Length: 256
Image (cartoon, rainbow, N blue to C red; front, side, top):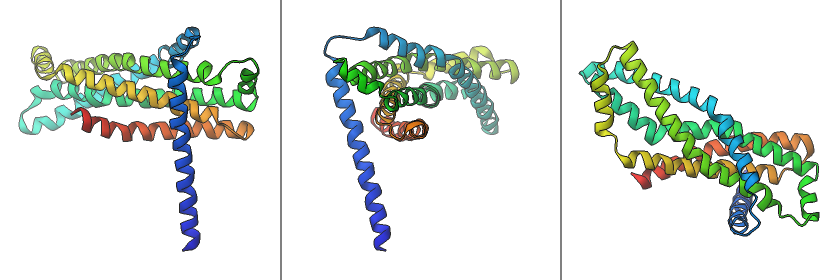
C-alpha cells in the first residue's frame, strides 16, 4: 500500500512539475514576445511549416470526413424521413467541431512532432546553449515564432477544412445519393449562424497555442540524446492530442 502511494505521489509531483514548466514557458513567451527585436522571418518560416506544408493532408482528411458524415447522416435520417437536414448536420458539425478538432489533431501529429524533434535536436547538440553565448534569448528566438505560427495558421486552415468538408458532404449527398442540390444548400445556410463559425475559429486558435506550446516545451527541455529526442517527439503528439480533446469540451461548454 505504501509503495502504491509513493508511486502515485511521485507521478503527481512529476505532473505538477511539468504543468508548472509549461505555464512558465507560456508566460516567458508572452513577456519576450512583446519586446523587440521581432524575428518575423522565423515566424513566417514556421507558418509555412505549420500551415502550408500541412494543407494537403488536412484537406484530404476534411474532404473524406464530410463525405462520410453525409453518408452516415443520410442513412440514419432516412429512418424518419429527414434527409433534407443532411446539409445542416454536415455544416454545423464541420464548423463547430470536426473542422477545428481534426485539423488540430492532424497538425499536432505532423507539425507539433516536428517542433519537438527540431528543438530537441538543438538542445542535445547544445545549439540552444550556444544562443545564450550569442546574447540571444532562445525562447524569443525559437518558441515565440512557433506560438505565433500556431495561433495564426490553425484558424486559417480550419476555414479551408470547413469549406472542403461541406463540399465533400454536398458531393456525396447530391452526386451519390441524388439529393436535391437546392434543398441541400438552403438547409445549409438557413441553420448555419455566424456564431457557429467564429466559435470554431476560436477553438482552432486555442488548439494552435496548445500544439506550439507543448511541442516547444517537449523539445526545449529534452534530455538524453537521440533517445530523448524520440521520447520528446512522441510525448508532444500524445499530450497535444489529449489536451486538444480535453480543452475542446471546456471551450464548447463556454462558447455554447
